[in-house]
Length: 336
Ligand SMILES: NC(=O)c1ccc[n+]([C@@H]2O[C@H](COP(=O)([O-])OP(=O)(O)OC[C@H]3O[C@@H](n4cnc5c(N)ncnc54)[C@H](OP(=O)(O)O)[C@@H]3O)[C@@H](O)[C@H]2O)c1
Image (cartoon, rainbow, N blue to C red; front, side, top):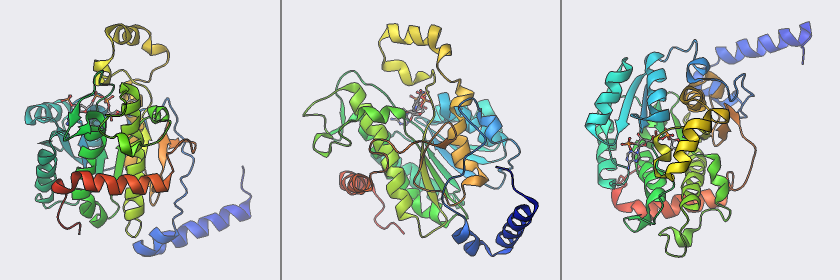
């Protein structure tokens, strides 16, 4: 739509007046309706962050040593951010940092060892930094057999509950930052959780299907972003979730061998590259266009359609309460 001269002048005045306001008032007038971005499924992480200067920002990311996490780490560091690169071991985190250069700090946790998650979060809190971003990226997919951690199905325990503990510890830091952002890696695979989160089957004892369990954990990531966003709405902090696309990474290591080989040889026809796969995360975590945008699920650098249970606030709230119960021993005693 083309604007005429009068409309251009009006828009210019509104923009100038908005920018002249003190920050708290400005935040209040910025719409939290996400704009349509100029990027799409072919955009890369470098493209969506081109021209951004992230120096002065500190952003933590889990799963920083592999696949999408490593590319996200590389690009955020390249744009000047101080990135807290969290991997499963200190060695893996150090290797990732050495690989990408820039200002990075290696940290470690095992999302299946909730004691270690709380310890890593406390370490970050003790660093005396402003935490501008937390990217909950680490994940596992499609475990062929039912496994449990602390009595809970393993994919839900790692992909959702491990990150839930991290989030609960770091939420006060995000809320204290000038514009803290939490970005959670979900997946369009959430659609296979046709009954939503089955709260009476979190241990997998009623039934277990590797893909429904993965889907449930990824639906939980999206709903967690929504519940967190609601809890941070009286601050400048935001939370959103993303589907990165379908990308050939180590995530497929539990797939049958023939599917891995098929992916290697035929995947180029329908999969994104790792550079493209990290784009939506980088866009949501850094784009100035998304100030004040919270509670949305993005794909291909834009808000995806309202589908399934993604925006089911009652389910999101129940998930938050149940997750709190399940992880109570590992949460901060006071969430300031
Ligand atoms: N690739 C896709 O097509 C796709 C599609 C939709 C959503 N996603 C999501 O994107 C995210 C990144 O996946 P990716 O494709 O980049 O996979 P990836 O290459 O396998 O990376 C996964 C990362 O998670 C880490 N991780 C796994 N278990 C962990 C644990 N217990 N504690 C700490 N870290 C752990 C891995 O560490 P190790 O290297 O030590 O195992 C690795 O760094 C995941 O959340 C995934 O669900 C991916």
